[in-house]
Every structure is written in structure tokens, then in C-alpha cells.
Length: 418
Image (cartoon, rainbow, N blue to C red; front, side, top):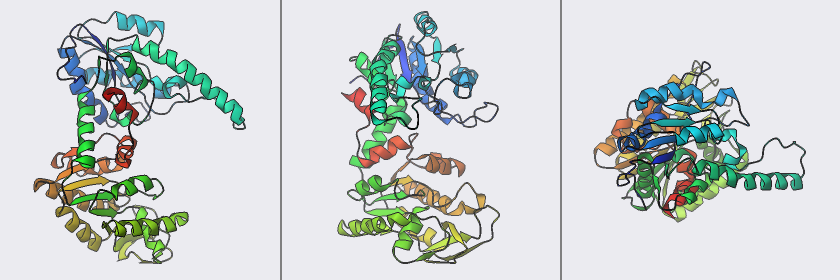
């Protein structure tokens, strides 16, 4: 398999799939450019070698061409960060895009318009009526899949080699993240960011040291079932926190007031607890909570045992006893995975629990533990608390990381490795 470090891009046009799906405000100003900065080492290596760049990305989830999701809005900032005036093709597979790509000279760069303006990128039909029959849906899907091959071929024709540096989309078998790689059997590779992500996942799932502790937050058990079940085959300690706390608490007969709960998953929570016990995994749940009389940063608050929350109150973060409990488990770990905050960290008055977890992870890392932070909210937490440089690795992938932890093969990775 080719590696970006050893590959010589001199005189070559490289199609680089990046994840520039950055947040924009109402005036189309970038509010967080982390994903763009993360791809710079890959992009700059290609230019430094004497190659030229054809940059492909998606932005948002458009259902067709719309100015709101045009990559032209990020073009000036990409140019500034890259230190090169980046050209723009207002359609990713048009004759104009092909002409601009062909005319690229070494050291030059071209940003293609949003790949998802085409349904063929995702391979999903659009514009179907709500009452479309199964036959109509199947026919539409078949048509998109057929045209997807031509779409992929046109993207591949722009370049001499392919680099995937978009871990955030690695779990999708899209045209630009997986299918295109087949057109470059000997000239495909991961970018630097993807290499780091793949190594981090492999380490946390296959090369871990014990005790191994996973901290799983989030609002719903239903979205984390497969992740939790796979982790139960690997970890020594599993901390269940965030909104999921209250489903587990209610399942055991606790009173959770107005706290978030999936009533149809109470049996599942008990089943997961049973599986953890059978596998010798210590399942760590909250013992107290910071509760509020409304879902607001300005709500009245107090602490109470997690299973005796008053009827008109709701749990929005963990309490001090739980902070101590979590910290003790974390600090005695050699491998740590954190996905999901302990509470509604977007509200300043409910950040303390997540901060305490982040600080415990940083302390454990300082003592030699390997720590991986992944998932959008966990990354936002670690950045908010200024501790990103005190953990081993902060992943850029949300859904991709979760699917990798589930044990799934990610199409964007498999396409390069095969």
C-alpha cells in the first residue's frame, strides 16, 4: 500500500478528498476551521513535492444545488491557510472543472464545488414523492447507482492519484470516499490525518493496555447499542453517562423526574447490565446528579441522588460524588476512550461534570495512559476546556469513529487498503 510520506507527487495532479464540512454563521463566516487546518499537512506536502491539488469535499446535506451549501464561501479562508490562491470550479464534474484541472501547474490548487450537489455522490435518489411505491423507490435507486459510475469516472479523470484525508466520511461508501479509489490501483493512499485516525482506532480496538475504560455519554441508548455491545467484549470498565444515565436508573426502579429517558429501552438497559456482569466488565453508573427545575442555564439547581429526582425536576449533569467515582476509575486506567459528555455542557452551569472527566483523562494521560477522544460533543468539550493537547489523540470523526468502535469495516478505509 502506498503511503503519502513516500509518494512523490512531483508533476502529478492529486485528487484529495477532505472533510471541509465546517460550521458557517448566517453571514457564511466559518465559526470553527479545525477540519480545514487538520488537512493542511497533507495538502502542503503535495504542493511542496511539486504536485497540484484538486480538492473535493461536501458541505452540509444539500438536496440539490443551493447557495447556502456552496464551497465558494470557504474559498478565501482555504487560500489563506494554504498560502496559495486556490481556484474554484463551480461544478465538480463540468467541462469547466475538467479544463481547470487540466490546466493546473505544479504548486497550484483547485477547489471543486460541493460534491453532494449531485445525488450520485451519495448514491441516494432525490425528489421522490412521499407516497412513492417500493417499485418506484427501487427504480430510482437503480438509476442513481447506474449514473454514479459515470460521476465517479469523471471525478477520477481529473487526477493522476487519489488521497483520502476525510476520516469523518470514511464510514460512507460514497463516490469520492470509496468508489473513486478503484481508478487508482497503484496510486491511492491515506492522507496524514487519515493515517493518524486509522492508527488511533487500531490502537484503541486491537492494541490496548489494561485496565481499559470506555466512557460513553449521549442522550440515547438506542444510538449506542452496537458500540456498547462491542466494547463489552474489550473493556474492563464501562462508564455510562449523559442522558443515557436516566434510562438505566429508571430501569432499576429509580425515580428520575422529568429527566430524559427512553421508556422503550428499559429492558435493553437491564440486558446490557446483565451482559456486562457476565463478561466481568465493571459497569459504572452515576450515583448523584445536578438537577434543574427547567431545561435552561438559568434554572434553579440542586444536587440529589440519581434515583430520587423530584417529579418536576430533571437531571442535566452528574453530581460531585459521581465525579469522584468516575475520576477514580479513569485515573487507574491505561487505555481510555471518551465519547459523549456527562451533561448539557452547552449550558455553562452544567459543564462541571464533563470538565472533571476531561481533567481526569488528562491526568491519566500524563501518567502514561493512552487516551482517545471522539465524537463531536466530546471533541467540543475537550477543546472548550483547553485540554486537547493533554490527551493522546482527538479524533475528527463522529459517526466514522463510532462505526469503527462497533467493529464495522469502514468503506473509505477498505478502499485504500485493498
